[in-house]
Image (cartoon, rainbow, N blue to C red; front, side):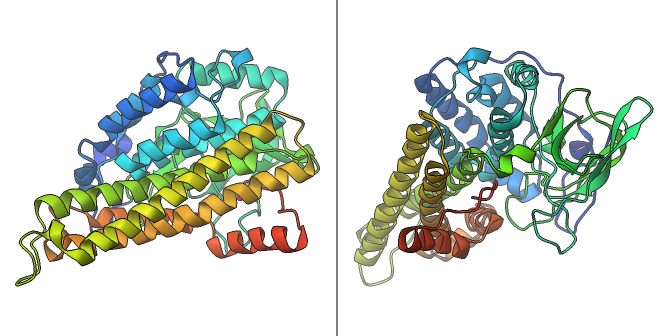
Length: 418
């Protein structure tokens, strides 16, 4: 396996940073309860926050932060109890990512795909596949992602194909937006098998024919390494090709779970921006001349802060409500109706967390004043992160989804973006 860095004019990180490989898995701490998971998230968030502005400015990848996340045991908190995991609630999962993203939106997003994939494993994998994958995660293996093709076609189009080789299945194709792949031990990707069926194929990151290219050049979420993965006749792990055919006709929660984590990341970025604004106004913002003695006495700043807090708390409340909705639905047989209701609940949260993430990160600079634009503080990263991450899927379609459901009773389409 080769990791390649494509340099850009702003990219000042040492080449060795992109060529670094994940440490071999070492058994993490074992989290047993939701309370332990939240406590671990707060501890890891402190590590994420240390140097986050500098990492973003220099585009230094957060290897130490990634290893800290893994060592904490957070990577396995959604593993079912029968497989040794904590199986935390969806509400707790959302809270974990909101806490992490408030500290560093990029470092938090690196781990997002692991939980989307684990929800898919829970829905579609065989018992033997689940046992293998869940065991690996609890042992410290990280799961990356090899996302959609980049060819102008629909995001759901899959041209990556499996073929029969002399010693098993082989995969050929190129995938993009591969968040987490550079740091991963496993890279699962959607593909089409020799029979034409949609599958989730699992490949080792260090397998021959697997190339991870750190060519992510987005102006936000700069240290996610969300670049390219190329598969060239790469071997697929025996027994780890998961047939996804049945998911088209079987209601599930893998889509809402994936979207819930995205919404939580946006909520976290928003909270980070609000906290940064409060700190800067209290300690460094100068008052407008001839009005008040301190910026904290400015009635217009006070009013804006009040509005931001109300909007942030509203988004966080709807996010928590969405998590609790998923918990309630997961407790009983998941039907077409309940699966649709889960997608709607998460869409409502995604709308509000998107709005507050963009608004709070913009208001941060306005409230803090001209001095907040200095490169040394790098406060612009909150807006850049919010703007880039919230474009993951269009909020205009979330509004349509919610409106069509409440007005016409239309159930959302079932896929990982709903």
